[in-house]
Length: 355
Image (tube, rainbow, N blue to C red; front, side, top):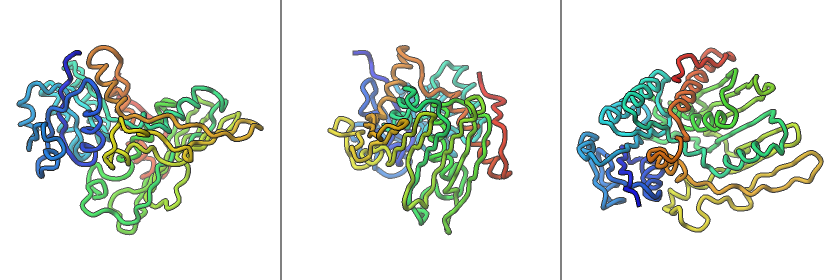
């Protein structure tokens, strides 16, 4: 067996604990070699055999670590990623990649100069429901897609005290938190839109950070396909996760991918039923005058992201989530904020996109 890729994870909050260390530990070809957590002993308790550091400089002293995962609060991503690249480490950044497209461009240039891998953690490309939608779109059964709606709704009427994502500070808010995933999924399916119109706002009485967005993307190159992306923290009765209409029929899917809740509960990837939707949560496809039929949800598996990174580092595959794609998502988030602030539809301008 070839030598394992040794990984250091910076941050051990929700992202570091659930979405990274647990996934890395379950993916063949990787060895979790270090965790940086400035305070507390949670990381040491969870991974007693893994070195735990208080500072990133301490972790850098271990030169066997080739890949560093940045799983810290969003406003620190750019600065920490720069430091990792200067130390000649490959870098994965949890979403959002950076807060601005200019920061993203800087990181891309640094990685290219050093011949280092750089990627954003867009694990929700491997949600089972999104994999199912991809298959339906690619299969052509719906005909030409005319509308695509993607919702990620929750019900949290009270902001959570002490949670940086809801603090109102740089990098906080639902657009950075969930919007990056929904934008990435839409552009994975359909490419870059022509027009963007967005509403980003605070809906909760005590809210400090944006907790609602509604983004409309128009694809003039696809017969004016309309894409709607939205998320709310005040959706007591959530709408469908996906709703697609085409010239031959429709597909509707309710419910969220189960992997996040399963990982939070301590379930492992090899557990029976992991990543699988119950039949009651399958989507419904209706074509022309045919009777509606239930479509089994593909099994979700976040390990596929890290498997691709492993294969890219060993020269066996191209990187699935490229830094240029991450730049594009960051730019579209910028344009969504601009559209909302100016209350107008604007043309999508990707000027400055790295080649």
